[in-house]
Length: 263
Image (cartoon, rainbow, N blue to C red; front, top):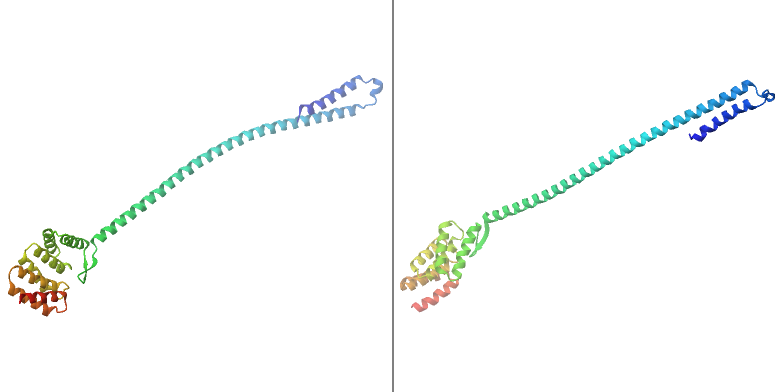
């Protein structure tokens, strides 16, 4: 309540007292003592009520100030908590992003490892190959070594090819490439004028695999080696045996032509 509201009743009380004193006696009878006292009491009650109201308003104002201070303090604490929560959220988000990167790196490493394992398995797992009409299983290293030796022969490196084929037979004595290796080894030996060893390898081929696709050529090569060794009689017999054993082969046609020149 404002000060003006409190002052007005006081002014009224003072004016009443002044009036009571200053009014002539002839007029005093107009007012009974009881009425004056009643007016004064009522005015005092109003003043007390106004003072109490003012006191309560002051108390309410102080409480309101205290509440405002507490509210500001609570808001500040809440903002501090929010800032801390945001910082924690940002930290967790960063950790989550790092975890995602770590998982991605782990998946890439696992993929690389898996590919490496697959590659190593391919290097050691047997392969299905077909050489000279023969189908069989061969190790990757076995296939690689045979093809390397054959590439030497086709490149005209007969001495190196002879060494490579000889080493192949020793390293892979049960290989499906064995018959073909014997054939090409014999040809490498023929090319290096090692005729007797060539005959030995070609005969080993014919004894072990007489139905092999290279058998007719091996027989013809034996005859060629015998002719180089001036063993004409042995060469004629070899050619005749070739024509009887493989009459439909191209080697048999070549053998007939050679026989015609030997007669």
